[in-house]
Length: 486
Image 1 (cartoon, helix red, strand yellow):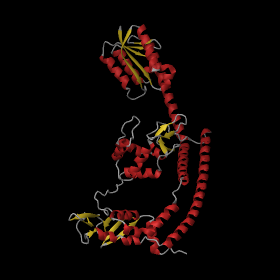
Image 2: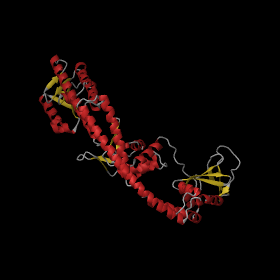
Image 3: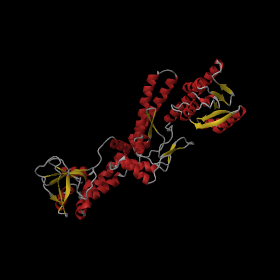
């Protein structure tokens, strides 16, 4: 019997339903081989596209045929199971003409060998051309379908980690990996973790990839740069507003991008000195750090990283703790003023709510007008009243404006934090700051100081704070005497 190679292939699930399944092709091939005295010595059952730049299994079969002179026959199902492109057809014809191989097609009972006439080769060329045309049509329709989905806000590809495709709604929906994705963004945004650290933390908490594998540093970085997680997605180099549920806010996404692009991370206090990393020298702007003396006393002083200078005295921890008190007294509210500010804020918030509603109505009107313009633009394109260049320019302009307005509307509709409740807590804290500070230990004192100020400057044994908001507003109001109840 003549030694034969059997190569069978499918490129989609739909083809299996149409009678081109691997098992069906294999059965037809075996029957053909039996009828024609052929012995199948090696077979390839593969699922791959005939248009892939590198058809691994196909090229393996070619190499095997070239290396084994005893194998003179290669069996395919039909022409388009062999190839849908001219390059692979040339490879097959090289086997025929230079390696004396005979090509069989089990479904059509056709044979191609070096003795085949020009008509046989011509028919093979036609069949390959038809297969190529069909493949091009399928590819074009697929691209058009994906673009149509994108314009409808439907993500047109496989869902990334944290989501899964719903074939019924055609939407991507969150799954049990979503909380891990949210935590990855939060950890990076804190400024205290690298992508590799996040990978390790999430792995320990059970986060796995689609193949149940570890999600490494590069994959985490790819996730962190994907805008899909805040509600938009990029398709064909264009951003589309998605219909899916975002996992994070755009603000958090932007913050993470800043950090990934090289924004300096916060310094981590590695020593157990409570007032480290909150004071800078007023003379040279170097850090003021604690140092242990005689194994029991803590003194703070300039690090002199830029060179020694005068005024860099050593201050013990007890004294420097007392030096912070005046900065707290400058943002301490009286009971009367705190109550007056609560009432004033309540009135201000009523006005703000009205402005918010007016803004929402204005944006809704703008969105409606833009949608009407876009609809008219499509009508003009169908009626050939506008050229392609003008159509694309205006379409992109309108779509970008619609995306921006939708983003503003979404932000306006979001549940806003209870500003009044938050402000009341700040006012209460401000009233009791000095009292709380005096009763606290050194670690608790440092936490209070970090709450109200981002940094302190030490100059001539005085500490000058840079207050955080809203404490900066309180300090300014108390200093200017603008806050006068009644």
